[in-house]
Length: 332
Image (cartoon, rainbow, N blue to C red; front, side, top):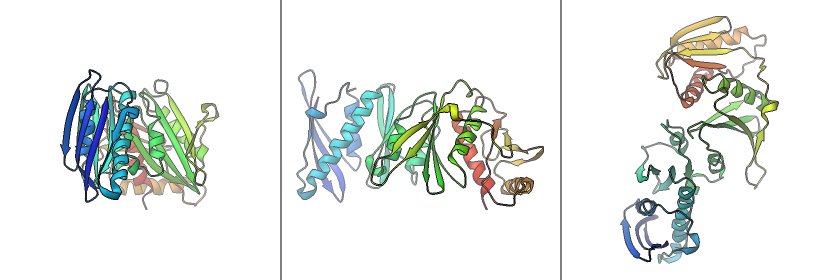
């Protein structure tokens, strides 16, 4: 299949794409798409042909718009090749997140169908990637939305029925990225804690999730980056993980994943009850935990275990609620 695209740029937007496709059956097909999202219209149309092999060597793109023509051509060609390669690798389902005219759009395919749509207003890339998924699908993002390339590297580790945790250390701050068993991506930041301690903590928390202990594999990675170099991902051996943590256990039992659900918080032998979004409840818990410590030094509080009375809660909800509840627990 050969594609020839001729875009016209206006106010930093590609608003018109014309093209020719030469099919494997020896037929020429002409297309034209107009509008701010014409790039996605073109990509959607191409995927409806269900391409089965890369065609970068037989693809050409040309823009006659002055000095910016080459940049526009490169932009369209790179997006086309990125999406095509992702589709060929994952033809059953997948998504592409792209920025067009300062708006975010999603191109998604599933069960032989493909469509594009804008994301909700004020939704960031990370917020979208953390959204609830009913089934697994791998994601890629526009390189313009990932300047240092870290998210793109992490997303290559999306695997169904597997949880992967990545820890990036910058000075004294640790940033954790977690891919759940359906491909959702979470980001959380910590300070004043060692990497090994954090890995042990998450291993204990994830293993305690019902049906995840032996069923869902868990992998832990260290992310490093030297000055002007690419990110390096190194797996942390599971044999080095010890669950013997020396901290006060904090377990929370919730009726459901709803933010206002009733909950009971156990702090050692003591317990407190209330709504899971009630700030005063978490202030009481924080004061109690700090009072039980031998040292008066302030430190980050963590949830050791989370349970739901409601059955069959996805792993994503455990991770999302853990992050939200720990924010309330440590909010000053």
